[in-house]
Amino acid sequence: MDKLFGKYSLEEVQIKDLSLAQNISLKSIVIPHTFGRYSKKSLGKTQINVIERLANKLMRGGTGEKTSGKVIRTHGRMQGKKMKALKVVEEALDIVAESAKENPVQTLIRALENAAPREDVTRVSHGGVSYQIAVDVSATRRLDMALRNIALAALMGAFNKPKSLGQALADEIISTSKGDMQASYAMKKRDETERMARSAR
Image (tube, rainbow, N blue to C red; front, side, top):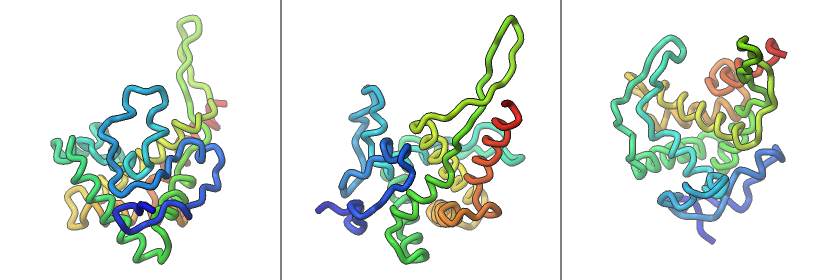
């Protein structure tokens, strides 16, 4: 049986959120790298291991816009560097395993379930007037938003700070999996999205 990074079993990981379960891939794989094999296929991302998708979200040039009052630009330090991103994810999973004393992939899945918003807003134009309405979020978008917010929280947590990116990612995964509203950026973003949707109903 192939173990993730030769350490963690993916067979025993359970997903309680049934809508996310259809989109989270937990294929047994040692190095989660598909070399863009599914990029041209419809809904191909659902075939990609969730660990690889998290690494893909880390490969970005910062926030590019004001997030929590600051703009973060990493000047492409992670863009295109897949193996570097995978090493960061492996370091984070090692820290999570040591801290949570359980399979870190299970902790990550719990964090994704907690960080995935159920409602969002979309802009509708009617007779030259634009307004926002609340919409239910599809399972694929819920997972995308959760992964993006966790990765973004890690980048912000490590930017211009002595903390490493792996440590920042591990801290965010642990706090989100516990449902810690104070420490988890991803959960704050989920609540903000759902609050906007409630007010747009």
